[in-house]
Length: 180
Image (cartoon, rainbow, N blue to C red):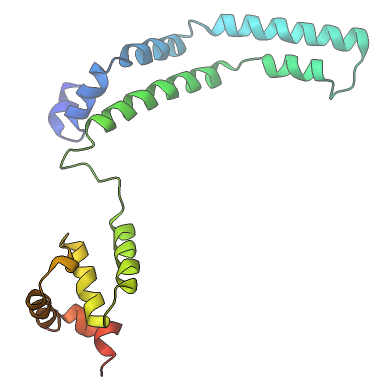
């Protein structure tokens, strides 16, 4: 373990946050119960009892295979692995969810919003903006830079348009090639 921590192959900070999370003890307890087989006999006892009752009903009453009671007894049997996978999965989910929420604002964390969706929304809004193609292009560029195009003075808009006309992105776009 010490070698793994020193190696840099894993995120030690994240490992520490997982290990110190309030649900980690419960996760480890449930993992230990499963790994050591502590509850195995109880699951086997419950399932054997249910199967015995099911067999008795079948022998006494010969119900159809799709009988509700028989199906209920069969569905009531619990597979140990399924149970512990479900329990530990819920605990992992809670731990990881809490840690993710705690780091939402971190610089290393990816934002929840999609920049692509923002660009699409900005372009759709620009298409409704009055003006020519260059006005719309400038509107989108300002939106991406979080500048209110509407609040620019006429001189600032003119200067911006003159600068944008020099942009290779504008020249190569369908908007820039319309006048050719």
